Length: 120
Image 1 (cartoon, one colour):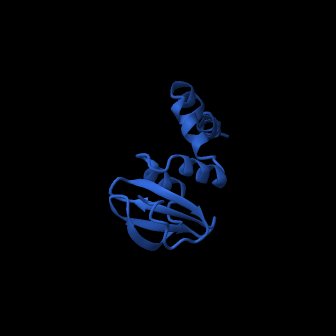
Image 2: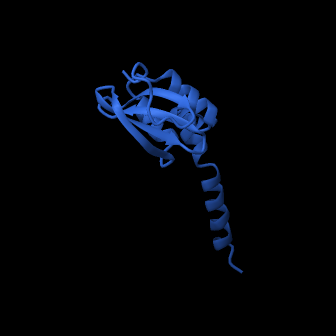
Image 3: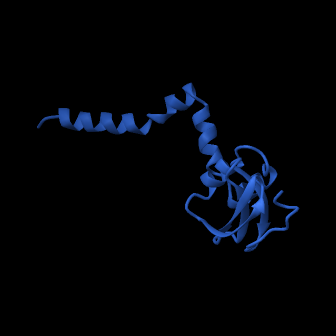
């Protein structure tokens, strides 16, 4: 009976089990990145509401709700036109300006057109 294949199997399992521990010690940003992904949906919406009008909020929107947004309207605002994107799962509408890549308005419910003062 050969023991080498058995020892190799145990070594590989042990290697893959503890692989990310040294990486997290060396690079703490990995821990922070995984913590950001663990936000609840309500926390994500609150974060987007607080950061509306700021550069990077459009990127946050894409990361948080990738593939879950449906365009329901276009209207004047932002730097020309804004697109109203509806998230059916959470019943929230975001108004997005692609020119500056920012969220300009957030409202609960399906809103095909925001007030002009909200999307300026």
